[in-house]
Image (cartoon, rainbow, N blue to C red; front, side):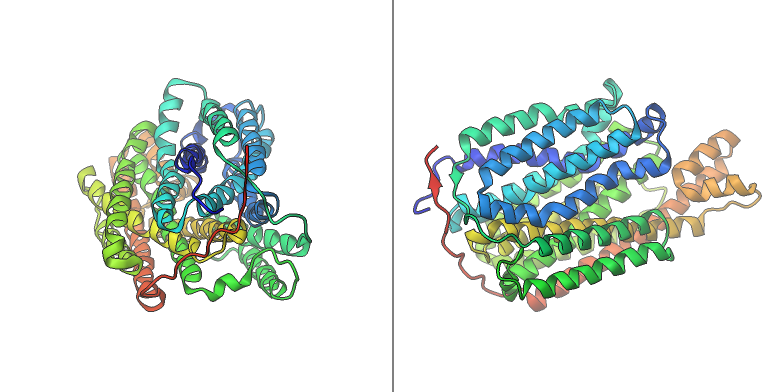
Length: 505
């Protein structure tokens, strides 16, 4: 492409609508689980798989989706992915059994696995180097905003409509996206036919699924669960074999030369650290608002809005300052803000009001606005357009696994701290286990027993576990500072020129 595509900003706006929907589907289900348990007679395990089916399929297909985008061109695959995502949303909304909903959520994961890397690679293809940081900031914001918006929209829909509405909301947005792709996205010639790395696809998919499943299971059970660690170990071995294979196959799934670039390697890894922090925060805060403060689904979602506000402001400020401070300086400042926000949050007590929580919540959102767009742009600018799809998929695969590990690690720390601190003295065995199982369960038992002391103990115990969780998050923020100082280059290399051709519509 010798000149910028004239409708590139309109195209990015259309893709952003779809990306928000994908983020929504990561979290919107959290507020609907109690309703689903009743209406579909779903067991606890089935409730967990409503979320896990989406996560596992997404992790498995990201890398093959990026490769196919490079080979076949992004437009036709985007259209197919949107059709799958819209159809799966309707299937989810009208699922009549837990098994149907699990299958439909897996189909949603298929659509999302193609939409995320293909839309990201289009930013590299359509925008010239000088415009990419701003375009990638918009992309990252759209990809991130749906995550905290999920509980807000889900809470409002559940208060006014049937549970299927949390999925049907996708349909009009997907239709807008589909029409926009047809008329606003140019047809792009991929690299054409060639050998497909089937062994690489099998190894990477199996490895990512095994690692993701292992950490998801750890979050549901404990660090001592042998089957969980067996899955993680098997996944790690498969991914090691995948890395070995990529260095020897003629047409690899992932260009290992990308990892010779400090910008790509550390940009991708630091994006993963940021995802770890964001997903951990989204995991902890709804439980604080609902279990400790007794907020409903909609109020809980509204109380997450400071994350969005901080993210928007942080991204805008970082965009303006990056020319003066450089990407490295902006990222370091972002991780300093993140660490400070988590340290402040770790001082929270059960007696603190929402104002204090909103303050450190906003600070962490601000830090995400500094870090996520900047490190993503750094990684994307290090790759050629011919490998934009597979490179984007690698970044997103790392972020997805990082977010999953974040929820598992922080969830285990939270549960361990809560179980050790809650007072179950004098309670019968089954009742005590229900209390130790979760703060929500303890609140229900306390209400049945009319025991304000038990409720106060559960709230204090949850906040104690949350504080330990936030200290852990602060440690990862400090790790981000260290990695940024030591490994990020002081000057970022210019992006390679585009190698794609546009075809007239």
